[in-house]
Image 1 (spheres, one colour):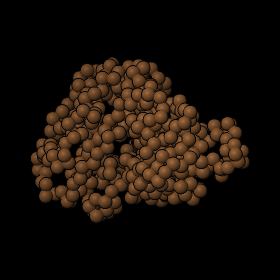
Image 2 (image 1 turned 120 degrees about the horizontal axis):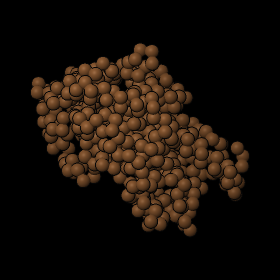
Image 3 (image 1 turned 45 degrees about the vertical axis):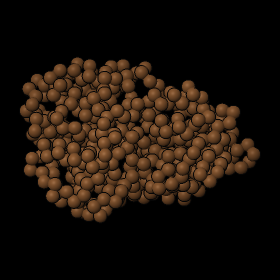
Image 4 (image 1 turned 180 degrees about the vertical axis):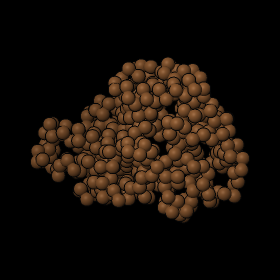
Length: 452
């Protein structure tokens, strides 16, 4: 309760998986918390949302669930969706010098022709060292990913394997990326291996993460909360350095506490009443965007779920054929191929028309697969997102924004705070629920409501 004896009104801004998980968990904490979630889009889920494509609802971007994603799987079960999850053995490949190489099993790694035997052994050592011997990742924050990888695996392995992958992932701008990034990625990907069979297992929800997002909406409403889709928030109103409510299209609504889950730049625009110093600190956090061409093909293109590309002549970050994980029957028989390119804001792709992106990407796909015929394409669409993944730099170059902001009654919970875990369904849902529990405890400790 608030001090005047009424229910505490909490606003959650942002209806991605993080915001939905946070709002859902908040409704469970106490009957006296009244949660309202506001999402600008008419669809919940954010970048995890779906779209109509090829006669089916498909993910706008590619997603998977690993068998080690215990918190996410627990949430899925809690929401009654466990029977909609399917796991399957997946394969990974490398495209190098116009050839495809399998790279799923340890023996395939040791047979990788572009590397000498000593290079392959050092690459294997890098992976094993990351998995088995690094328990404290803090020292990695102070070391560049380039220096660390060269120390472990050698310069030749770095130049042939890691450098092209880093260039593709970070749009060439990885000089300030700490070693923590690769360590975290190796640990996560290797955790997908089934301990009994040794196979790489990945999973998905039938219908995609959109099904999870919509089930979270229903759970929030069942818990007494409200979800407002298509909500245009003009401003978080701040008086005497305390957030007092939201300026909406239909007027002002007061709230006792406001929790924002949007990217930091968007949050900065919502708080013109905050100090200029704080707003500028939010705007200095760099984010990667993405431009992605989705193809619906009438046949499979590769045997791999993920095809890593080390050929610098090809601009894609990778090639992800999700229907090597998802049975094509769930997406109207299409074979879905995602061609993503992560970009910095200054990349010309950010302003390139969709038709030109499609033309450029298809031309490069033909370089990879000379037999590829555009007649195989039933549908193609370009998707974009400006703020997809925050760039965590070497320790000290920028500060992670804190959950507790300098403005009273105002909290921030977004992906820039999730580290060293990478941004994925497991990390964002776990983080959202954890923040909800922490904030609920804070409300109780401050005696903002009593009937718990």
